[in-house]
Amino acid sequence: MGTDLICVHTTTDTHERALALGRAIVERQLGACVQVSRIDSVYRWEGEVRTEPEFRLLVKTTRARYAQVEAVLRELHPYELPAIWAVEIALAEPGYAQWVRDGATGT
Image (cartoon, rainbow, N blue to C red; front, side):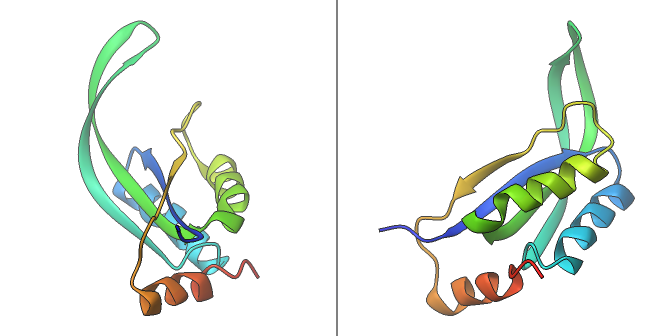
């Protein structure tokens, strides 16, 4: 038995842009919270291995809001091909789970 909660992940190039993306999601009530953390990414793009600092966003939301979260990220994201993916949350403390649901009403 799982929950209806998911965490949507993406990365972007600057702290300011990460905060702007997070704020857009929370202000539109598509996620209860967006955490931003600095990471170093090693990846292959256009045949070249690159190493770049990035900022990871972790959006706490519901499965019902995934398409809307993805649409906002696609609309505002600077990358040609942003990584946007979700992980299901199998278990969550009931009060916290309700807080996430309440924050992801999508109004």
